[in-house]
Image 1 (cartoon, rainbow, N blue to C red):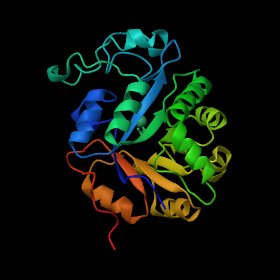
Image 2 (cartoon, rainbow, N blue to C red):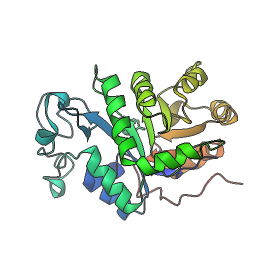
Image 3 (cartoon, helix red, strand yellow):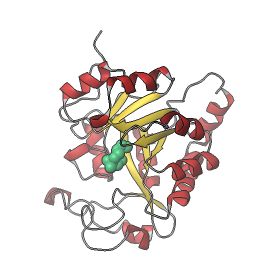
Image 4 (tube, rainbow, N blue to C red):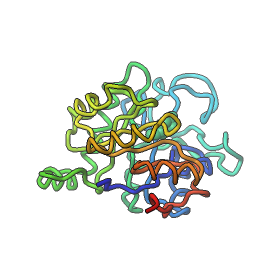
Length: 262
Ligand code: G3P
Ligand code: MG
């Protein structure tokens, strides 16, 4: 039932390249990955860019908030040298650049909407709108044939820890599928998925139990885990019925990693 790739490169190229940059996307591709997860946030001017942290200091040097800078200013910033001198000058990239890269290279996307605090609704709405515009033809085909269809693998999957962001995405672009991200699966998970008309639950594999995995699958939802970095653990959770996961160790867990045994 899960129509998407099983193994997904986390933040582009996992820990092998500077996260959420085009260099990361190229690295994932070089390792044979045609499925990628990345984080999207809004610049001051409302342009979606790839970024995990709302403040500078870790992947981009300096201090301050991402939301206080325009996309033009952000894309002039170095998001590579923190990982090593070979990545010096690798810029912050826009969501549009990554959409184009992924289309050119046949890469499926799990787009994590990562709003800065206070920008949840706007970020969800804008990311969904930009995605819908980019995938216009696929959205039309999906909407026309959606009766009985679970989700269209030609379309990306939007996900977020922010329920408000996903609600806004749902209102703006209902035909772009959604997955609800939660670190720990709470008792109300099914109501949340229903409210969002979501297709999948995304959760931290560290807190997942086999019974929870079974319940999610039995309810007809996809189950996606982050961030699984050893083949042993990957095999274990796939055996529980987990449909897909992202990994930082694209060097240890290949895109063709075997599915659940038996
Ligand atoms: O989308 C799965 C995973 O990326 C969520 O956590 O912090 O790595 O964005 P984080
Ligand atoms: Mg993420």
